[in-house]
Length: 287
Image 1 (cartoon, rainbow, N blue to C red):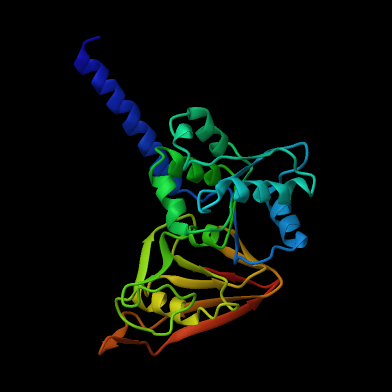
Image 2 (cartoon, rainbow, N blue to C red):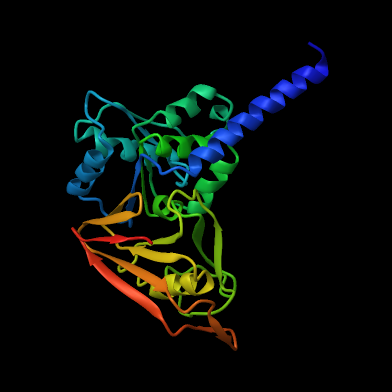
C-alpha cells in the first residue's frame, strides 16, 4: 500500500471513531450523574452514590480522577478511602495531570469501562485543563456515561458537569470572593465543562456560601440554561431528564422565563425568573 493509501485509511479510522462518538453523544445516556454540592459527605450520601452506580464488592470498579486538587495524591487517597470503608475495594485513582499517563491507552480504557467515576473537589479549571491536555479523556468519560457508568463529583467536581462551567472568577472584581456582591452584565467568567448535563449551569456550596447572586447572574446571561444550585452535604441524581434530590439540605433551581435580560448602567434586570427550592426525596424535571 502506498503512502497516500495509508494516510486515507488513518483518516477513515479517525473519522469513523469521531462519528461514532458524536452519534453516541446524541443518544440518551444509560448512566447517571451524582452531583454533590461540596462540604461534608455523610456516609449515607456515599452509600446512595454506591447504590445508584450498581457497583458492589464483587461487581464493577471505580475510578477517582483527582486533577482538580492542588494535592492530587491526597485527594485520590481520601476519594478512594470513602468507598473502601464501605466495602468497595476495587477502586483506583488516575491523575491525568501526570504527563506519564497521557499516552497510555490502557488508562483511558480503565476510565471508559468504569462502573463509577468520581471527581473530587479543588479548582474546576485545573481539572478541565488536565482533560483538554489528555487526548481521548473527554471522550472516555462521555463513553463511560453513555454505556451506563455513574459519573459523580463534588464541589469543583460538580461544577465541571455542565457545558457552561462557572469558574468562580469575576471580570470586574478580580480579587476572589466566595460569593458575588453584584448582579452585573459581563462580569461572570465561565469556561467549557464536561457537558454531561445539558441545558443546565451547576453551582455548588450554594446555601452555605450564599451564591444566589452568582447563579442569578449566570441564568440572566444565559437565559436558555436552567440554574441548579446544590447546597453542601446534598446531591442531585440525574437520570435522563429527571432529577432527584438526596442528602441533608436543599437544591435551588432558577428558570429564566424572561428571555434576554435587560441591562442598564451595567446592571442586569429580569422580570420573570422562577425559583424552586427542593428538599431531599423530591424530584423535578430539567425540561
